[in-house]
Length: 292
Image (cartoon, rainbow, N blue to C red; front, side):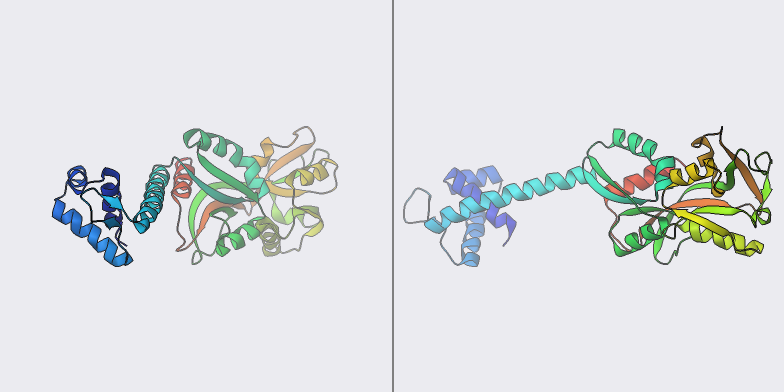
């Protein structure tokens, strides 16, 4: 069905006159009559009773008129929704974020983004970085924030943050007053790490193995604050990004730069390759990129 045909019929029914309808629609009366006739032929019913001088609708015409009005209203509403989305008045997105990254960066990001786009709904879902990658690849998340590197054949990547990793120890630890530390000096330490859902788990073990030792991992957790509390009780040491130094209690925990080798913590926003990116997601990416 040609939408114009339906629209022209509705105007004729509303005006109860081909002449008035043609003036309202700014088309010739013969053209209007032809369009309405074409609609009748397509639907295989008569919509207008042409036996009288006044325009009267047939029973079928009444049904098409009532349902046609709903169709036109729905299309107008759809146009409005698309306009709102195009102009970022509305939209929604799901973002996967590891708890540590979320805690360090996203309260401020979400607060400022909501000020700019209050009608965009953001759902934050906490997963470890490994899980975030899997969910983005499946299409269950619009965006993910992960520790780099990732498979760039699967994902488009927007760099986000780059920091250095540091050793965190109890203030009474023999290394607590050091200005810097080499990774190989930690081969006899008891480590507290994130669990296997987190990219940092595999990354830190791999860095230790490259230095020549396998770390003694006594505890694993999915919560950075629980790990920091374990350090505060002098139950082991851990390696966190530099930003964590501003979150832990400096009276009980010391942060020491690791310089040999220097371990970087590079974050990126990832999207599944070739997946449609909503206008809301595009604007979030643009906003995050502007903060780099």
